[in-house]
Length: 479
Image (cartoon, rainbow, N blue to C red; front, side, top):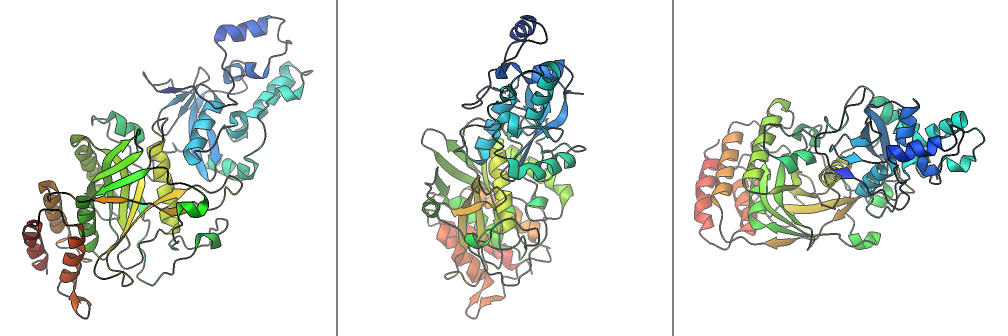
């Protein structure tokens, strides 16, 4: 049966314009006793507590679900009629409060959640349980009392919601697949609430081939199609092209670009890493201050948790927050695939879902060895995903280019240099290590290529080139 709320959970009360006011136990009793069971309850009087008390629903873990614009949210129904969101542990006083919160994560412009029409209990809309209660206890009641918000705005998503509910009956959603929960022994209360560190083995499910992939325009995609290749690359749109403004500003440190570019140059396989920084809610500025490469193979699930725990500790020790992720397309364009678009949308929701305020999650793709690049410099593409229109919930998210300010650091820091040497050691015996003595093009070796690309992210202190010579000599000795 249902578990009790944690000792000090965050309780969310705002449910939007249509949120029903939750009654206290005494008010419910007064409504019932005024003229017996036959007295008419107002719409706000029929709450989850009423349905629980009369046995129409039972508390339980994972019995509540919302499906909105292709995203699933799962909640626990508690003994007191409140809802606990599985993903973050937040407590909501009503279905409308929970629905509004979840829908605003996907679509910030959403004004209300239509909670009783959107939330399903074991696959069935809660509003139907209101109807059952009225038929049973107030058969003469006007059925318009059931809910003034039952506008069936999510009718198109009904089938998918039922399927998702069936799938989740035997699993605890949100604790597997894209994320790893933070170890409870680590002192990361804010990060642990986010539960965001996405498992590297799931960011790219299978290695992409080196065959040329021609990017397509977003407008040609249409509705989701299971038969479509998930590795299909999609051209980025501009915010202005979809009548939007970029909702945040971004500043990225040159040392972040240097370390990320170095990591992506080392292997012919895709790599992935995290971005640490700070989010200023007053200025709406996301500052990316540190890259954290994942020294693990994409198929190595055993080492993934240890690597992510180490990154988690590094974030905490530096007083940084997790603000995004990066990955490489070694020989292809630095554009998101359909799979990348879905991953980015999931990461945005997980990072934003830990609090009531908006917080962006930046995605970056690095293309080091694509011959369509201009010169030796890697193409580095920051991007974000805008959810599809509400009237087309089964479309893909819209990948958009993010305008970024690049900030030149004064020095190449010792921790970045140390991270570079750790990467050299990790890939030293790798079968997919880039052969830096070979030629990238007729007059440029792979070593010339990486040196030229990293010089684009040089700090102000010109001594960095001598410092990096030691790293380059290690690369030359790896064959």
